[in-house]
Length: 137
Image (cartoon, rainbow, N blue to C red; front, top):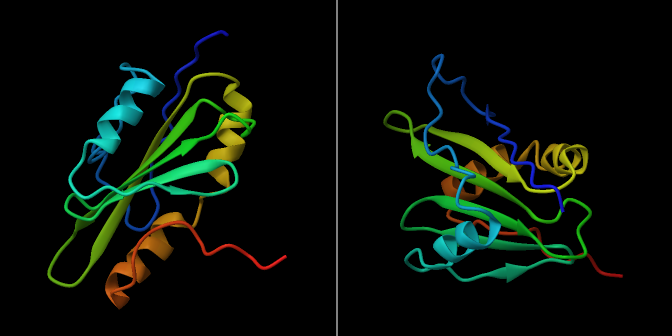
């Protein structure tokens, strides 16, 4: 498999100053090492969806979403960092790494366009941050 690492950086809630990308994910360790590091964060409990594993670290305000083998973008990771930006406001910064088909990675990242907004709303309301509840069939 051709290894293509791509980083998609976007401040989805508040614009970051030029050149500033707080908590940007370093893709160089590779998928497996990034996954192991995410699981070693304090209080992380993996939650599975049909095609991804969500790892939320409330102590660090970091959410990492890893593709599972059945995801067309696999192997890939999305990294969301939430930071306090003032007294009552939060900012969210998304980065990610795709290690295979870059177009499938970009499409997968696009599906999480509103992730930052919903995660911040969950935190403000005291709800857990994590994958959406399963939909009844």
